[in-house]
Image (cartoon, rainbow, N blue to C red; front, side, top):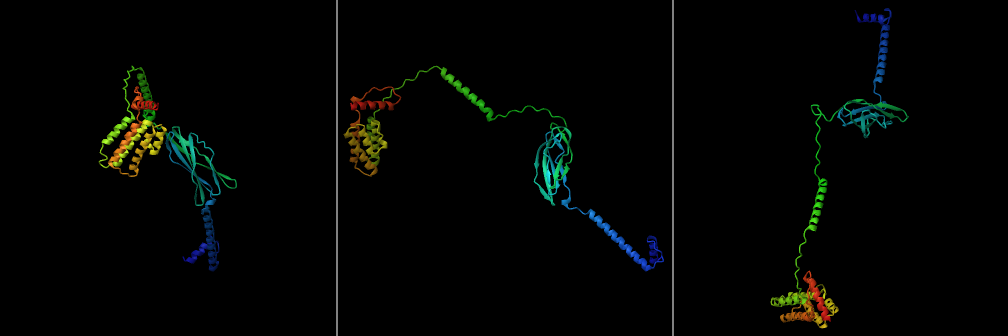
Amino acid sequence: MSTLVRWQMRCQVRLQVPCQVPCQVRWQLWWAGRRHISAGVFVTALLIGSASAPVPLRAQSARIRTELDTALVSVGGRMELTVRVEHDPTTIVVWPDSLDLGSVEVLGAEPLPPANEGGRSITRARFTLAAFELGNIEIPSFDIQVEAPDGSSTTLSTDRYVITVQSVGLDEGGDIRAIRGPLGIPLGVIYVLPWILLLALLGGLGYWIWVKRRPAQASPRRSVVIPRFPHEDAYEALDRLSASDLVERGEIKEYHILASEIIRTYVEGRFGVYALEMTTGEVVEGLRGGDVLEDAVQTFGWFAGRCDLVKFAKLWPAPDACRDSLEAARTFVDQTRPREDHIDWRVGSGDGAGSGASDLVAVSRNGEEG
């Protein structure tokens, strides 16, 4: 059977057209029917594609996702529940003011930094939870509001979780551990210091009682100290200087420095004038203020002036002149020393030589002035 005959039979069945229709007319009818079917298929495919095409993200509704870091905790152990809300940038997420999760306690809530993904805003928050009951406990769902600028709102609900809370007193075999004994208090400074202070206080109190109750001992006999007079020290020092060989060795300056210190020390002990710290003129004024004879003041002035020339003006006297200076010092002591008939030889039992010497000097002065 030829192709044309098969086509004629198909036209008779499907199009219900008599076979007597010319072939040209039947061909036109077949082509028109095929174009109509193709157009219908194209329109149907276009509608199906439009229905399955993704809607823009901004037109999608808000979505929520929750994450729990663990489902097995110990009594009082902490869990972190992270809530993530994906919404349109023009809307805002309103978190609940308080949460009632039944047997699960909310220890804290921390908002996380917002993010932006594909033109959508991501708002997150982390909730810290804890459970204090043993067994399987359910974390119930709670609602979150997403409000639009026009006043409408969308309610989103978190997922529910079932967690297992176990005891912290179980060992690896599941048995309860034995009760531990009390812990010892470590010894520290704050604990030991009060006891040390108490022992020190008791020791001091015991020593004080022992001192108070011990028998009194006889005080040792105080020795009598015979004081020396300033002029005696001056005579001895001048004799030692005279017997030295400083002049023969050419140490003229050292010779006059020692002689000056001997006489100035004598003036301090005899008259109470601080001659070692004064100039020659100040010492002369101090001697005159102490009612010293004018001849003695002039003798001191000549002697001290000669020593100053050697010490400061680099005067280089002959050996005989050096001996003359020493004789002038001895003459000054002779002129100012206390006379023996005016010295009170009564010596008390003082504590030292200094006090006794001052007393004797005062007595000798009064006798000399009288």
